[in-house]
Length: 81
Length: 158
Image 1 (cartoon, helix red, strand yellow):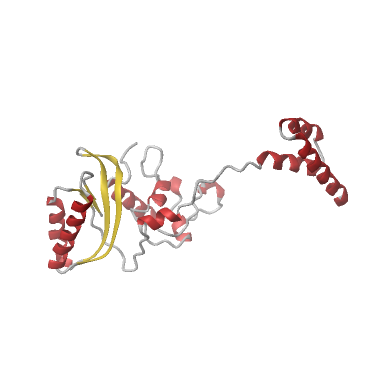
Image 2 (cartoon, rainbow over the protein chains, first blue to last red):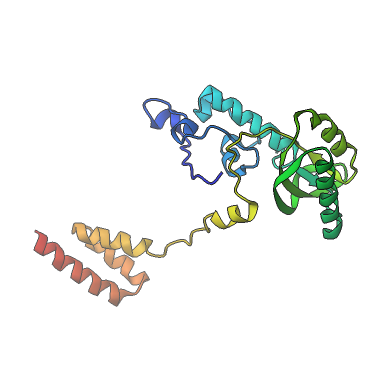
């Protein structure tokens, strides 16, 4: 939670090869309480962003989805906007 | 994580947490870490509550105790929502207040944008007429002196 991560918004076009932000920052787990990280992976309607847009590897995408669903359950994050 | 109903008083909440700890200790569990987030607005309405009191607990439990604890939290009327998850052994948690301190303060918009653009133009040695026009808006004298210095420097470089 304490590490600072730089999220590139347009990974697909800015980098030649797509790289997972969590793999490069060596973050194994994604916490549902870490709202600063979670908000980067939700769109304007508060839906979970597709892997096509997040540019994250499959393992981490699943962890993100899990974290967002947990955060929704305890009302830290809305289901819809 | 526990979410208590917002009308709960501070003393009542403390008593609730003490009872909760007692209940855990009776069943062979213990509280490793406790973090009180305080009252916080809910992202959506739950029942008739718009806000909730968030408490994060890090517990050590005997493996067979999960179901009983789940039932205990479910029955409690003051608990609006709860979430019980497993974490890794090397789980690193930064407390709520510390995280607040770490957050960067909103940046003050820098005022140097206009002069810097002018100086940049001056250093390149082009569009002197533009600079004069802008100088009228800002402090004309100070800009002129600055320009003069910059132009001198440019000549030396040439």
